[in-house]
Each structure stands twice: as structure tokens, then as C-alpha cells.
Length: 634
Image (cartoon, rainbow, N blue to C red; front, side, top):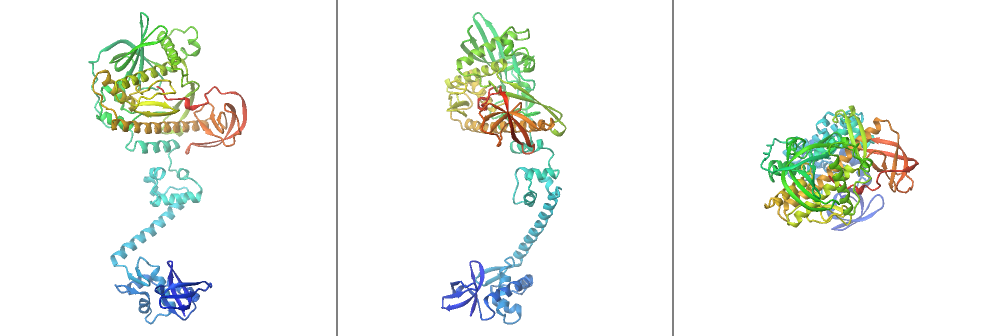
């Protein structure tokens, strides 16, 4: 006697050794003996052998017409052997019964299992829906197969065109297009980005990086909604000073300017900050725009401003105008001690917008050590530089910008069409007298105003550094890297939302009004958290776009080897470019060692630059070895 039984979801046949009422001892063709429950037995037979039964039943099951079998079955539950008798028109043989059982088991769409060997045919409406789904899957599989073939032939399937952003940046693995792309990538050995590029779907590497950023941070686009320009008040008192700003040529959001008056003993130095907080009120439509963007986004060739151009134009400290300003006046002694300070809300006449490229050839480390040539604001700049040097000495910290290089990218052509552009990268070493002048006076303003807010117990957002960690906080903690008791970003309200918040609080403080943000304000905490995350993401994007244009420049100039300076281990800083990366082939060399590297791979799509060590060079780099020293100052 032999039996057909179900075990672990599979059908097996074996010879009966012992037959008890509730269990059987059986032996399979392999010689394995096991004990099975009697309830698991589906069919008992004498002929053929267990092995032959399954060998004959499996191919016979594949020949059974499942739709016809569904038509033959009754509407209620049935035992497979009963249906086998009806289907065959006679008492089904063991092979016929087993083949029908296997056929029923292989057709779950047509037949639903109801127990051991028992089934029920699917209702017509459920069957129709299931068959439709099955057909849809079949058509989808054919479509995926076709799309894979097209992708492997480097032809873009028509279904991909409206989905390119999703496929590149946020792929939905349930979509057939994503499945086809993943399969084609696996079979070609290319990444999704490189495969789509080979298919002509990528406009440019520049577009890939920019689109990725915009989709995440500006999903509705970068255009501003219509806004009403705030009324600029003329009721503010007008300062008696004439101020001037110091910026690079591309700056349009001019946040700060300076003035200086000679006193009987010393000077009265004015630090004047643009005051958009006078017109942009908390919870206003303009505040909502600034709160959403949180900062201006910078990249070579363009920028995305935090505020609409009309608002920037209204409040920027442009030459020839009387501009609303938040002013900090310092009483400075002849030995450049700050004896007193006073804050005012006023209108300030801007006499000039000085630009770095015009002033630095005349006012630099060499000229300040001797006799300065004659140029506008020469004496004022010399006095402010002397004050800045004294402030730096009192802080006990060297300028945080010493030895760090700035890089300017001039894009000749439309950045939206980078393949037709030429890029020029110029290098400028920080720490010049102009740099020190601006940086130190901004430290004075931000630390002084931070102290004023802390003294009056008015909530504000500070930038602190303790135990080497820089972070944003609502507590007036020290900034150890700058050597000040507290540091509240307040000097760039046109470009940073934190500065706009602090300016609202300062205006309330100076005007003896209740501040908008109370202590432990949830809105203040939320704005600080969102700003810190977003500001870091914007900075990372800027570095990525600068790296893209660096790679474009290397390719444009057909450069195949470059110099670099070892930072630590296998980390190097490439000469004359803002690129720091690891070189696995670099031998163990001390920091500061100059090396020559060959360019092995250069991929603007992924921003990858592969370098290989060639040899060491003589000489030392004039650039600082520690990037962490470049704390962000205005």
C-alpha cells in the first residue's frame, strides 16, 4: 500500500510500513522513514509505485485545461477525488486523481483551498478580477522586457520622459519603469544616472545636481509669489554720518556699512546693518517667504535669494540713498579701546559701495605697512583696520580666516547651458586688511548685540562654540573659537532668517517694546532647528556645485596632473581649487607635504575625481591645513 500526502506545503508519495488509526509509518523512495498523521493522507493506492505516480502525474497536470475544469466544478466545496471522477467520466485512477490534485493546487486564481484536498471554485466576479490582474501583470512583464531591451540599446523608452525626476531622485520600486531601469542597470553594469545619460535623458550634469536640490528644497519653484512692498518710513531720525560698505563685486544684498567720526579724543565708529525687520513683520506674507527659505542659496553663476528682489532693493545699503538701518556706535579711544557703545534705529546716508577688486590693490598687507596711496575713504579704512587689529588682539584669537583661500567662479555664458560655458576660477587668500576689518567689526556687532539681548533677558538665537563644537542655541553661551562671551548672528538680515529674527528682537529691545519671541518660544526653537539644518544643506549644495565647475574647469583646460598638499593620512587639498579628497594610493607623508597627482577619473555626473600619487614636490603650501578654522563670519 502506498499513500499520497501533503507535508510542509508539498505533495509526497511513500510506501506504508505501519497503518494505525491516527498515524502511519511510511518510507519514501530515498529510504527515509517518517511518521505522518492519517489526516494528511490524500490518496491511498497500490499501483503504480510512489515515484512513478508523481513522475506521471506532474506532466499530466500540466495538460489539464484549468478554465474547462472550473466550468466542470460545482459551486460548493468539493473533494479533489470527486471532481477527478466527474472530469474523467469514470472512477479516476491514482495517477488521474493525483494529476487533478496538482492542477487544482497550481490554479489558486480559479480554485480556493478549503482544507486538505478540498477546494471551491472562485466566484465569477472574483475570478474575472483576478484574471484581469493576471493579464495586467503579464502585459506589465512584457512592457518591462521591452523597456529593458530599449535601455540596453541606449534608447529612452517613451514611458520614461514624464518620470525622469522621479527615476533619478525618488524612484518608486513598485513602478514598472523603475523595475526596468534596475534590471537594465544590473545587466549593463551602469548606474541609473549613467544609463539614462547614455540614453540622452540627462540634459547636463549641472542640471542633474541643480534639479536634485530644487526638487528637495524648492518643489514649487524658485519664483516668489506676488507680495506687497512694505511702506518705507521717513519718520526715522537721519544719522549725521556718511557710511560706506565693503563687498565683492557680485554682492547685491548689502547688509553692512561703516562710518567714522573724529572726536576730541578718539573716534566714533558706526556699524550700520540693513533693517528689513522694520518693514517685514512677524507672521506677515514676507515673513512666511523668509521663514520657508531661511537663507539665500549661493552657487557659481547664480543665487536664490531669501527675499524677493524688490524687498532686497528696498532695504539694501545702496550708495546714494538714505537707508533704514540698525546702527551700533562705538566710542573708541586713541589707543583703540572701546569705551562705550550705543544702538540706534535710524536712516543712514550711504556715500559709497566699495568693492574688493577696486580697494585691495590700494589697501593691502603691503600698503598698510607703509604710506598708503591716495584714494576715497583711505583714512577711514586705515583707522578701522587699526581698530580691528586691536580687537583681534584683545580677543586673544588670531583671525579665523588666516590662511584660508576664497575662490571666485566666473561663468562665461548661461549656467543653464553649461556645455556652452567657459569657467574661470580665481583664488584669493583670506586675512587681508579688508577681511580683518569687516570680520572684526562684525564680531564686535554680533557679540555686543548678543550681550545686550542677554542682559535684557530677551530671547535670541546665538551661535556658540563649546568643547570644540559649533551649534545654534537660544542660550547666550560663549563662542570659544572667536573668544567672545556670546555671539548672536544679527548682521545679515537680508540673507539669513536667524539674523532677521534677532533684528526683530533688537528693535524691540532698543525701542523698549515687548519682543515678539518670548523666552522658550516654540516658534523660536523651531526656526532655529530648521535654519541650522537648511543652512547646512545649502552650504553642502554650494560646495557640490563648486566641485562641479572645478571638474568642468579641469576638463576644459585638459589638465591631466595637478599639485596638492597633504592634510592628514591620505587626505589632500588640490592646488588652486576648493577640492579636498582622499587619494588611496598616497604613501604615508607628513601634513603639509606637496605632492603631484595624476587625474585618473573625472565624472561631473557623480562629482567623482579619482587621483593617483605620482611624486612629492619641493616647497610648502601657503594655505592653512585646517579647514575647521574657517568659521563663517560676515
